[in-house]
Amino acid sequence: MSTTIQKTYINTPNGQVHIRQAGDLKKPPLVLLHQTASSGMMFEPLMQILADEFLLIAPDTPGFGASFSPPDAFSVSYLSDALYAALTSFGVDTCYIFGHHTGASLAVQMAFDHPDFVHRMVLSGPPLLSKDQVEGLRASLPTFALADDGAHLTQVWDRIRKRDSALSLETIQREVLLNQMAKEAAQGTYQAVFDQPFGEQLSALDMPILAMGGENDTLRACLEPAHALLKKGQMKVIPDAGPYICDQNTETVATILRDFFKER
Image (cartoon, rainbow, N blue to C red; front, side, top):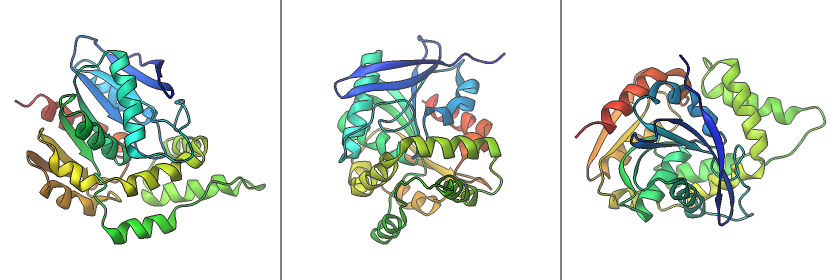
């Protein structure tokens, strides 16, 4: 039997945040934070599996999905504050967090700013980037522009396909459309991640944290350096997996989350 995923909007001081919710309100809250330029939609397969064990909450980060658009200049702290406001308004006092790529940046920021809010975290592809990596990525970021011949769609399609040639057409289609919906917010969010003092924040956290990623993830090289900064850290690599583990390795990810968040 499939689980019903409910959708709603939460008012925050800066605008409405769109969330997906599944599971029992009496179960421990597990917040799912998505990558750029996706939305909470990327977690729907995972929510189907874990709905019996957690209250699952997957917000769309401002600028993505159906959440409000951030201002022209914003930071990871701004995005994290908006999500924290939405979660607390929803009634979440404490939670577990699973953050994937940009979602890992947001998770670390939230835990750094509100350490009592987060019990445990799983960071998938934590973006602990070197200066050379940042400069290379910054130079490669495409600007958002519409093309008469639709090339802006095929370019994103090709870019996502190259990340993982085994990715299903349905997942590519979803990510292309979400990327186009995000417009300039995608590049702005990458820039915000580049400017975040991620390593300093990560090394200051005192809760149990699992750093994980696919063996072929685009951020695979960040895993060991991130793990080395953790005070109470574990590390796990998913063999033969790429950057879309929530779609392609859903059962494996569910087992990892279940085991880590229920560990005492």
